[in-house]
Length: 255
Image 1 (cartoon, helix red, strand yellow):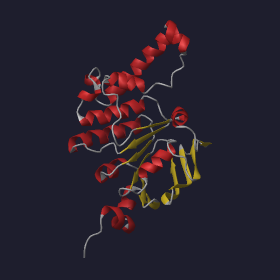
Image 2 (tube, helix red, strand yellow; image 1 turned 90 degrees about the vertical axis):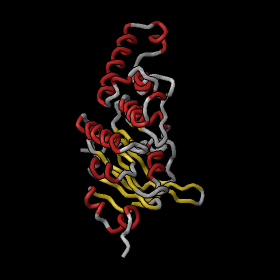
Image 3 (cartoon, helix red, strand yellow; image 1 turned 180 degrees about the vertical axis):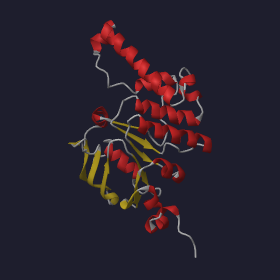
Image 4 (cartoon, one colour; image 1 turned 45 degrees about the vertical axis):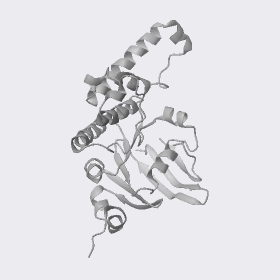
């Protein structure tokens, strides 16, 4: 089985600063994989390279074996990526349902003429999109909030709504940038179960997260970045017990 995502020898320089150096990762279909590391380790920079916001100084990014290095973000999104961001980027004055429907934009086949004349094809497609959006909202426990404005939702629900919108694109790979950030313990626990559900539904997930309890309980493999370099990789138990990781990120006990 070929990898969904392969990152080979990726280096990113900003002037004299080397943000990433010779990074190699691979994600297999159906996996939940985490990227961890201290602030400034290069995690979000790596996400931005994968999704086309940055073109790497060196290296290659492949989706399903196809080179996507340097393609525009909207082209990469159509190839099968969807992501969330550290800072919530919902449309605050639109309903939860409409936010999810917007996630399907660019993945429908009706053209301008279909939209102008509201053809049967357009009507069928709209009905299918609404049905799919409602299914996603139920899955993310947002059904009762489907008509609420995004800005009126509690923080935890806004986080879940952003994931729901990303899911609407039916991506090959779902990238979550600190999905549990700012959540309380109960919200984090609910999100953990929802991410596990994504796997059971066939989604492949790559996430960045600082909440170690969350990461250790949901990820099958971890990559650890430190100062732009790959420090360690492996299953959560191996990473948690790696002396280099303990010292650099999880904390070194004082003698």
